[in-house]
Length: 449
Image (cartoon, rainbow, N blue to C red; front, side, top):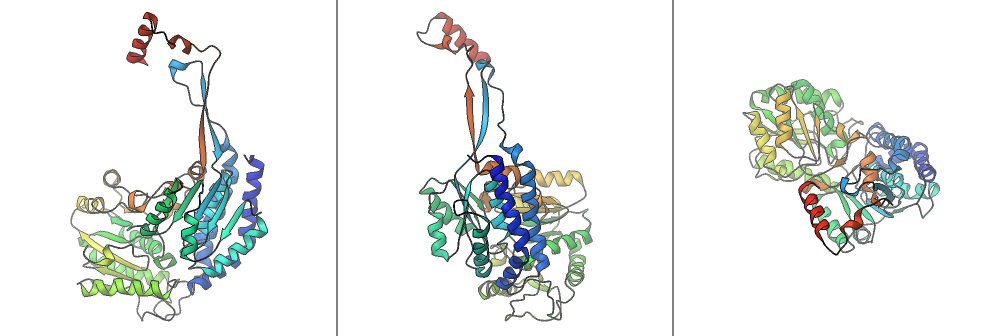
C-alpha cells in the first residue's frame, strides 16, 4: 500500500503536468471544439483541477489516518478501527465536454487514495486526447497512470475490463451500457450522468441577478455542460421582464455575438451535435413554441456557432423538454404558484443539478425538502461542483455515487473494518452449553443490548 509520501509525489507530478502543459491543453481543446476561448478552459477546467489537487495535497495525509469508532458496549473493552486501503486499479471514462477537468478530477481522488489508474479519453476530442496521452508518459510510469485513446469499440472493451472501480461520465443511455459491462466483473461503478437540470425562480428572487447567473451558467462552453441550467420555471408575471433582461445580459456578456465576431463564445463540438440542437429548436417551434434569440445576426453552421435563444410556450411533448439539451437553448416555463413549480420538478426524473433563486428562507426550505437532485446551488449556478467539501454526483437517472475531495478519496478506497478483541473479553460466557446463566444474560441482551 503506497505511503503518503509516494501518493503526494504522484499528485505533485500531476500538478507539474497541469502547470507546464496547461496552455498547450487549452489550445488543443479549442482546436477540437472549433473554437473555445483559452480563458474559459483555464477558468472551468485548469483552475478547478489545480484547486482540487492542492486540496488533496493539504488533506490527503489526514484522510489516510485510521478512524476508531466505539465498539458496541456489550463487547467492551474491545475496540474497532476503520482502515482506508486502495482499491487497486481504477478505470476512468472521460467525456468530451470538459476533457481536462473530468479526467483530472477523478484522477486526483484515485491517486490520493493510493490507486493505479487507467483513463479512456473521448474520441470526440482527438487532439487533446492524443496530447494528454503523450504528456502523461513523461510524468508517470506505466504502472501508475495509463491513458487509452480510441473509438467507441475501444470504450466498450475498456468498460469490460475487471477494474476494482470504474467511473464513467457521460449520457444516461451510455451509462446503462457501461454499468451492464461492469456487472459482468462485479466492478463497482460511479456514474456521473446528465439529465434536465431545472432552475426555479421564486416569487421574491432578485430577477436581474437570477438572469445574469443563469446565463453565465448556461452559456459557459455554449451550454455543453452536464450541470448547465436546462430549463427555467418562472413566475408568470415576470415573463416579459425575464426575456428583456436575458437579451440585454447576453449581449453584455458576449458583445460580439451579433456580428459573429465573438471569440469568447465557444462553438458546438461537431456538425452532428450542431444539427441535433437545430433539430430540437426547430421541432419545438413547429409544435408551437416561441423562439426568442438573445442576439441579432444569424447562426453559422460552418463555424458551428449557434445563437443562444429562449423558448417559451414549450410543452413536455417536445423533444427539447424530453432530452438533455447540452447547448445554448433555454426553455422557459411559466407557473402561477411556487408550489406548482416545485411539483413540476418533483414529477420529473431526478436531475444532476437543481438551481433555486429565492430570498425567502421558508420557501427555499420547502423546495429543498420536496425535490431530489444530485446537487443544489441556491442563488447561483454551477458553483456546487467547485466545492472541495461537497460530493459531486447524481441520483437515479442522473447517476450514482460521488467524488471530489474526501468523498472521492473514500469512493476509491476500501474502508476496511477491524475488530480488536481484548484479553479481558467476557464473550466466552456466551459459549454453549446453554444453561441458566446464559439464558439470563441473553434475556438482558435482548432487552437492553
